[in-house]
Structure formats: structure tokens, C-alpha cells
Length: 199
Image 1: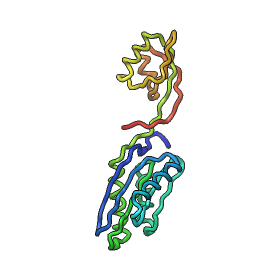
Image 2: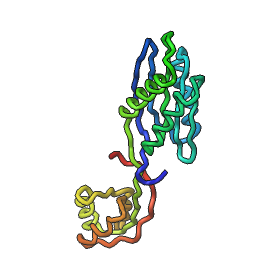
Image 3: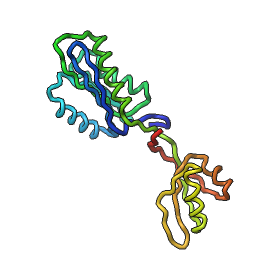
Image 4: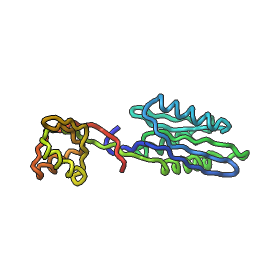
């Protein structure tokens, strides 16, 4: 994953219907193959009477889809293509209950995508952001100042250790040094890491 990518962090649901067929969609978080398998097993268990459960998924370093018996290119592939177009990671699955009338590939694809997009729209989505961890050792007066400045200058104070001095880790973007220099604080270069942030 890279900065700006989106990740499904909380479940969303959607549905669509056509000619008696129902499509129940789920946008679900999954960070690895084990979570993917567990999410799919849960959907299959809850919707064991569904005729098909096609899905598309994107994990960090792996993506794929299953049509689950639906015509080629009609269900799982469009769900994966939607996730790719959104630069999003997670699982989109649709439980299809057949209503007795064949829809044709075009209508089937449209109904699956409509339900999937609705589920994605209802899900909680976080964004991958490049953050930095800055280690700092300050006296208690400076720690109080940092506490007051944290919300205004958009940084988080993590893991304070109190002794003769206070050791803290500040979490923010790469411009924190510039913002704090104006307040008479100097930082060592930060350690970069990727994290999920709600937009």
C-alpha cells in the first residue's frame, strides 16, 4: 500500500433487486488471507441459501476475485475492478438469491455493482497516510506546552515516560519540525511509517 490508498475499516452493506433476484452486498475489512477466508466463511454461513456469492478483494500485495458460478466477467471481476478504481483495499462480496428469471450478463453485472457500490459507500473508509515518529526529551514545562500545542499544530503525543525529564514520541506529518521551530522546539529527523487515518 502507498500513501493515499483507501482501506475499508468498518463493514458496510448494500442491496439491489431485479426481476425477483436479490443482491445483498458486503464491504468488509481484511488485512490478510486469513481474515479474507474468515470473512468469506462468515458470509457463506449467514447466507447458505444464496445461489452464488461472488466477490472481489484487494490485500496488500495480493488481489483476486471469484465469480462463484456466475457467468465470466459478470460479478467478481467487476467488484475487483471497482476496488482498483477506488485505490481501495478490502473485500466486496455479494450474496445473490436467484428469483427465477435470468437477467443476462449486462443486468447481472449492473445489479452486482449497484449493491457493491452501495455497501462500499456505507462502509467506514480510512486513508493510508505517511506519518513520522519524532523522539523528544523535554522538561515538564516544555511538556505542558507541547500538550497545549498538539491539537493546534496537528500532532499526537504518544508514550510519555516521566522521570527527571519527559521522554515523548510525537506523531505527525513531515512538516512538524517547521511548525514547532516557530515555538522554539527542535526535533531530530522523524522515523517514517504508514498508518490509517480517517479523512
